[in-house]
Length: 170
Image 1 (cartoon, helix red, strand yellow):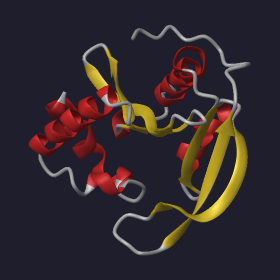
Image 2 (cartoon, rainbow, N blue to C red):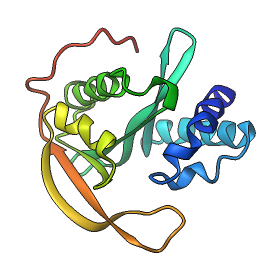
Image 3 (tube, rainbow, N blue to C red):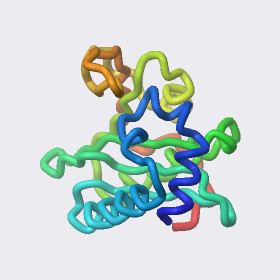
Image 4 (cartoon, rainbow, N blue to C red):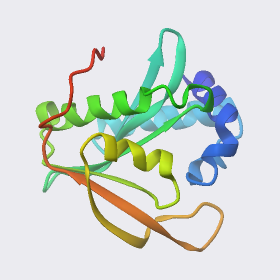
């Protein structure tokens, strides 16, 4: 999926760059393909779980579980959506699906979503899905290209109660 992921990143570079440091490291489709292989290896090693989201043959974006802590067990959910597909509810649907999957299939007991306090589009997803704002704190995630500590929101959820069913195919 390297070429399709790169096309989505390249299309969305301007809006993704302020929030995600990995965008700068993805300059070619080969960079994207290399990262896809790392995602696959990390999936097998249970270090990170990335899911590529398609609608028909169009790559919409990526969501997944980052840095799982198997002792608790807990993980953070991350996501991004290509600019031409934003505002259509795809990320909310995908995040709802992997939230249910996390609790009902994987066995996580705590999920978090971290986002920059200024990234209102990203924050709208956990708010729509019944995550609770646990804290606002500086320095939870880096600000790309700077040494600044940014103000972040940390949303949390402990179960899948109340999430609607989606017609998701795995």
